Image (cartoon, rainbow, N blue to C red; front, side, top):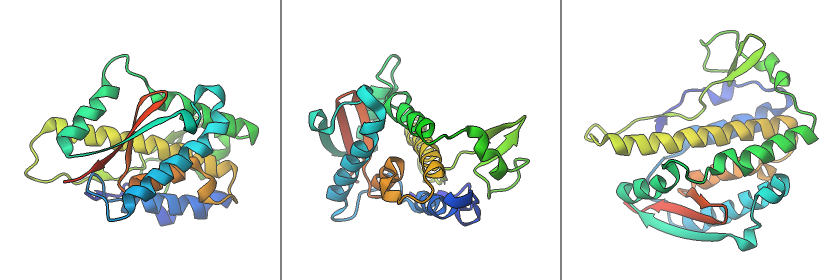
Length: 225
């Protein structure tokens, strides 16, 4: 399932980080979401998730389990199984991975490299109009635009819950991309292969959908139909 891009990746300007950030956003726009992976992509996605964890771990300090202690389960199924798996982390008081290690790691990485959100203001659009800006300027702050594409849902899909879980996951992927853009902005000349969030995005592109069930337990979900 391909989405309608919200942003024109090749018109984004972000100083020295322009080229790698454009590449990241172009990858995001090209992902075929929630479909079975190609042959060979499963092993590649597992390896990419391993690399994502390894790249993130040093920056998250002791809030993140070492990869060797992580229980990683590979699961296959359809939309019903995906919805049920995601329900484990959407319920009230469930473990909230995204507001833990990834957010902390990106913040520490920015502090170490002297990043200030105000550094992004020269690249912000003055209003909501253009699709060539990642954020707009409002009262001296950067307001991020949602980078993930808008899903084109099948016309015969009348299951509101199914649409909801896919949009929920895509919203989370947008947050990953925002982390990745900031990460690249403070190290503009570094390879995207050194950016944990770009690596995670590639895992998505390979058809792997990580669901962090607990601090040391991950389900890497693949659609099989």
